[in-house]
Length: 491
Image 1: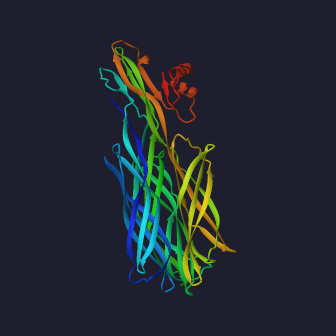
Image 2 (image 1 turned 120 degrees about the vertical axis):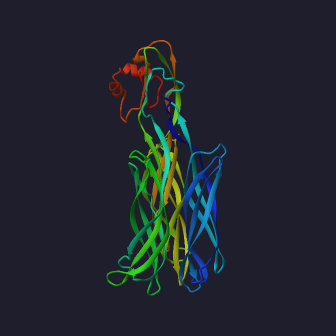
Image 3 (image 1 turned 180 degrees about the horizontal axis):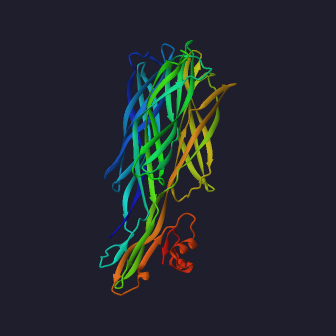
């Protein structure tokens, strides 16, 4: 007889730092290190776990090191290191937790010409949810010949689905106008911001992967080029429905490449293999009607109301913006390749919209004479997002950057980078609903013993509700006097 709503309430949101790294030795087939030119680091989450005392996540940090060897050439090596992040819960645990990688900061130095010392700190955002059972229907009512009818109310919950180590193979053609490469030195893979299209029992996750290759031509010169691949992946999860609010994260790893010939017999194709992981956090909402019909000629109902707080996901908003900047060409070197990262940003609400301030770190690999070295430039940005948000609600923003375009001219470096912005959040709403129904011995009519609570469809007015349930506007207004929520008590 007694029925309840299930609501996932977030009880913890915090950011934790996880340390990784160590001492890494050069492979025997690699020459000694003369100078570290660039290190590109990423972090991959394996899982998130919670118990009564703590919430934790484990994962793996990857370090791709480009260095100038004692032979005067550029060389590339990769290493991996596990990490664990943990947060002690003060008020008990939850039944669901979620972790999101925010950024990874890596410091690297040479211990000797054949050994790297690497230290990295990965920022991880933890959210812990606790299952709430809200009983808005009936408490302690015995079925003494009464008839009781109940229908679905409003339920909000959050779940996670993921697919790991999904293989992807690409044949990347060297762009026309670039020389035939003698070898490929390295490749970087950067996933863009994914979009999610939910349907019954599945989610279609679409995103792009930007690949950058650094190649050596037959005459010993270096050049780089970019390639973009569009990817679509179907992830299955029973709880996903067309009305689910979803957001996704994508991580690329284990990039491999091999230079092969094309139909003209030239070395113009790079066979590329990589793997990617996808995780989708989806929140569901079912809007229905609260119905509690109890009627008899022998009993009378007395209603007691209470307020319950429901959590509702805000739809995801995504946008693309171009960030431009200039810097001094400190040594006059020629830019061979460049990558970027965006770990420093914040969100404020101004005039009903969203303003995002931050800075991009652009890493450039430059050739100065016969040697190679790196230069880092910070490019500030400020963008206005026309997406209304309520200051009282919880709002979050994620910013990712694409591969930058860089050029030099008259002692200046000109930089253009696209950033991907995704905004999501949570709003809380208090609803007035039935807490208890008690029975007396006084007889009553069926019409006076029925209680109906109704959540209108978007755009539905009080007049529409009165017409739907065949009651007068005045009766609707009297029954809902002082009720400012988006749910009607039907007299």
